[in-house]
Amino acid sequence: MPVYSQKVMDHFTNPRNVGEIPDADGVGEEGNPVCGDMMTFYIKVKDNRLEDVKFKTFGCGAAIAVSSMVSEMAMGKTIEEALKITPKSVADELEGLPKNKFHCSNLGAQALHKAIEDYQAKQQARGVAIPVAAKPAVASHEGELHVCPFCEGEVSAADLPFCQACGVKLVFCPKCGEVVARDATQCPHCGAELKPAG
Image 1 (cartoon, rainbow, N blue to C red):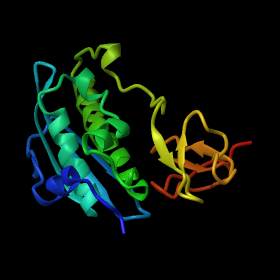
Image 2: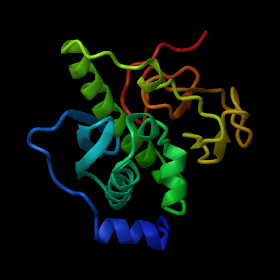
Image 3: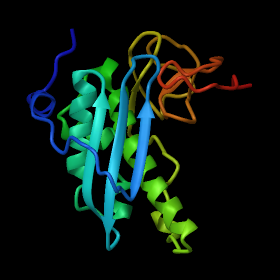
Image 4: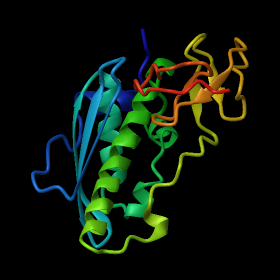
């Protein structure tokens, strides 16, 4: 049974910023068809800052705690600052997550980034220039810990292409950023179709 920090339990039992923003400037949704977690983030932007952030989450306690923490971390931040929120920074703020729940922090950060992307796309459609620095960067995975889907050992970007614990060849899923088997055809974390690496 996973052991959760007091911070995780607090955000699970008393989640912050739950709800929907009817006239949201951006909406982002991310889910994991394998575990069934689904997160939707709504943002309101004023003067390049996230004036309001709300979420609706269907999922386990860790998913709810992650959504709550991401909303708190993003509130009042500039677009650029909010895009720097990573799965690792979310897990760190929650004082850790069990290995088998770390994917929840990926979902929360990704749903927020998708809401920002939605806002930016709407702005560009209106002819508003979006600074290059404000566009989401491709995740570097540097310093992030992931879980091997085979032995549940911790894997970092420096370890790839092999899990140091069991020796299985691994790659990063291009959609959710989690580690998957090198020859996988579908990501077990987000369900994305994958082309096996050559």
